Amino acid sequence: MNARAEQLLAFADDELIVGWRDSEWTGIAPTLEEDVAFSSIAQNEIGHARALYELAATELGTDADALAFDRQPDDYRCAPFVELHLMDWAHTIARRYLYEEADRVRLEALKAGDDAGLAGLAAKIDREETYHRLHAELWAGRLRDEPRFQEAVEELWPYAIGVVEEEQRPELARRVGLELVEANERGSHTPALAELWDEMTEVRRSAPGATW
Amino acid sequence: MTAAAVWAALEEIPDPEIPVISLVDLGVVREVAVDGAHVRIEFTPTFLGCPALEVMRRAMEEKVEALGGEAEVAVIQDDSWSTDRISPAGREKLREAGFAPPAPRAAGTTTLLQLQSKAFRCPYCGSTETRLENIFGPTPCRSIRWCESCRQPFEQFKTI
Image (cartoon, rainbow over the protein chains, first blue to last red):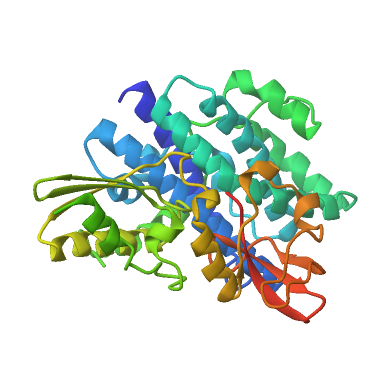
């Protein structure tokens, strides 16, 4: 696989899996407003994943659905950060906040990069992410003085670093005001991914090739 | 078949989620090129996760087929669609249907301060005494605001 396809898949897998995790709040978020917010954010993230898979699919001679659902868990290139099954609100908001900060650093680099197709798509994605960042900013502001939130941010920070490339890490650390530490790197998976994959691909595996 | 005939046919397609406005008013059709029976339509998605995109694409193909042509819908995934592309007539139709049209992109990247300001006008009574209820709404393209004057919620198009 070429470097472009690798890069696209890493980004697409992050967006698909984080979107899946966000969607786990649909129907059970603490308030109706957050139910709507998390569902909408999940829909956007999975939409970004689809667009990125489509670009990758032209490199790899396949299609977006096959890339999203037909690979084995070990073949996904997502960062361990997005896999974690976090069902308490402090950790959920801490991940949304840290993920959006990391994603912004990644998007800014792609927008300025030489790959015109990817730069154009990154610019489009960034427009939508603006609203995710505002949502995260609102919540991070509200919870800033809560010890549970501070602990969650600290606990998840090494994972968040693993989302971006080595050279982008000092910038990410500067933006969130945390010290650089050893990252939980992309390349291996947490047990949470296999569980998520089982659920996510169940319909696809039970009815291969089905269309709606 | 002429490009003008195709444009006229596309103008009859309502947005699947907000049927008061057509795909042409929405600004998602970037170009129409006719070569004999072959019609190439350049289409720019609104939000990437919008489930209406597939419906729009099929509707465009059906319109071209009804004209006796063969459609090729090329989806352009870059930053060329913006809410600024919604036509003035389209903005008016949105307002009449109770959707506050989007602010222009020129106002810069949306900030919390802007969203929480009173710069947004209620589509029902015209008051700017409105406040943000939720950045997110029933579809990715909309936020929810509350009008203090006529005391009802309304949907505000996000600027992208």
